[in-house]
Structures are given as structure tokens and as C-alpha cells.
Image 1 (cartoon, rainbow, N blue to C red):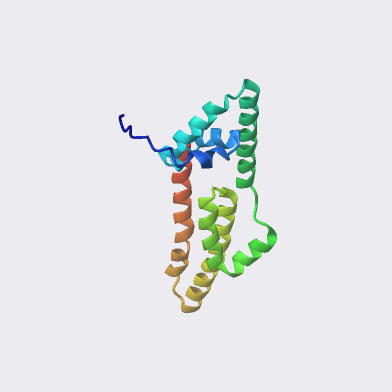
Image 2 (image 1 turned 90 degrees about the vertical axis):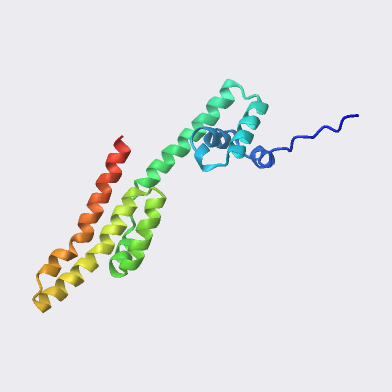
Length: 161
């Protein structure tokens, strides 16, 4: 009797079985680069094994489309007034949150937090340089605004490609 080596089962299969059809389709189509190849393979196997009908696939695709639309809406939300005031008075939090908003692709919040955090910095440098009579520092205070615009233009041009 031959001792056949059994192929180990994919460790992601049990995890993927718990996912909805829409989540599996999202993993396979939109977010495959975010997952290990074995996880994507397990998701594909689960989708095949479920033998989805056309209506079930359409329903899962509609659910995924709704999720995408909600994330687009969330990326276009403005900062509430209390956060605007907070970031203006405590710019370090505005800078930190701008980075977080950027990583979450909440572009409008990123722009607002970054701009509000820069305003007090620009104001303080301008005020101190005026008091000292060093007008060149007023120009230097505008550098973060210039850098932000350059970064934003690069991001926009890379998205357009």
C-alpha cells in the first residue's frame, strides 16, 4: 500500500467560508493585491463551490457596488466644525489626522485638516518675523503650502493616468 502524501488544505478556506458572496467577489476582483495568494485562491474555490446563480451573483455585485459608492461618499465628507476649530488651535493633531485621512483616502478631510493645521503655523512665523523685522521668514512660512500643492498635483496627475 502506497503512502500517499496528502496535500495540505489551504489554511484560508475556513476563514473564507464565513465571508459573504459580495466580500468574496471583492477579494477576488478589487482587493486581490491586499491578500496573500493562498487567500485569494481560497476565495475563488469558495465562490466556485457555492454554485451561485445569475441572480445571486448580480445581488452580490450590487451589494459590492453599494459599498463602493458609500466609500466614495465618505471620501467626500467635510470635517465637522468642532474638528476644524480643534485642528486650527492644535495643529499637531491636524497634521497627524491629515496623514490618517490620506491613508484612508478621505481626500476632502485630508485637505481641510492639512490646511487648518498650516494656518496657525504660517500666522506665528509671519508674526514673529514681522516683530524681528525679518521679512524673508514670511516667505519661508509659505513653503508648506507650496509643498502641499506640489504633492496634490502629483497625486492628481497619477490618478488621471
